[in-house]
Structure formats: C-alpha cells, structure tokens
Image 1 (cartoon, chains in turn yellow, red):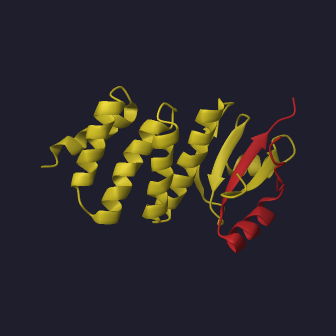
Image 2 (cartoon, each protein chain N blue to C red):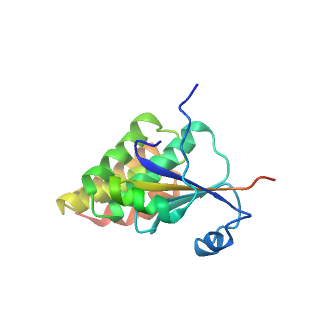
Length: 138
Length: 33
C-alpha cells in the first residue's frame, strides 16, 4: 500500500474538524485524496480482501483520471479487471476504462466498445445502464 | 507476516509527504468502540 499511497489514519472521535470537513458519518470510511486534499473516491464499511483492494485500485484510477493522467488511470482499471473481475469495483472500472480510452484518444468508438464489454460481462450493473447511451454512437 | 504500515496521523504532514513523493493519500477514519 505504501508503494502507491501515503497512509493516513484519523481517529473519528478525536478529529472533529476532519470528520466535519470530509462529512464522515460512519467508520471505517476510506477516502482517496490527492496532495491538495481533494477527494477522488470513498467507501464505507469492512470489505473482503478482493473488494477492498478493488476499491483502493478504483480510487487510485479515479484520482489519476481526475488529474488527466489517463494512461495511469487505465492501468489501474485494467488491473482490477484482470485480478478481481468479480469484485464490486469491476463494473465501475470497466466504465471508467472506456471513458479513459476515449479521453486519451478522442475516439468515441472507445465508449461504445466499453459499453459492449459491460453488456457482456456485467449486464445487470448500474454502470451498464449509465453507459447505455453510448449505444447511439454510430 | 505482512509489512507493518507506517501511518501518518496528520493531514498536513500527509499532504506535504504526498506532494514531495508524488503519491496519493489513503485516509482511513477509524473508531475504537
């Protein structure tokens, strides 16, 4: 974990200012921040290892995406899909992989290809619904 | 045995370190019930 992140632990009962600043209501809450303190992803509750690592990778990918580091973002999303294809984070990773490929290439076909993979691998996911509009791309 | 994690306890210190080594921050809120 320390290869990718600076780990920071906050005692919920002793850091009221930080609890308020990030609107934390329950523990454990994990938030991925950049060095400016901007939030990019969060999740709440105890997760089994594959889902925990999946969420951490998803947070790293979303932070890289938000920072316009699309190649690094794609690596994170692809790692989730290869190592943890059944994790809760996987459909969202597939969605953002398609969007990252589009942002990097400006080719809208990447969005449609992403949707086709979502429909094939995660047909019941909310992320497949969110990508449905890309079916209109010729 | 896994490697022991060295947790920061201050956001200010974590941000300075993250800026220096160009990393993200993983912030974990915990509660000792």
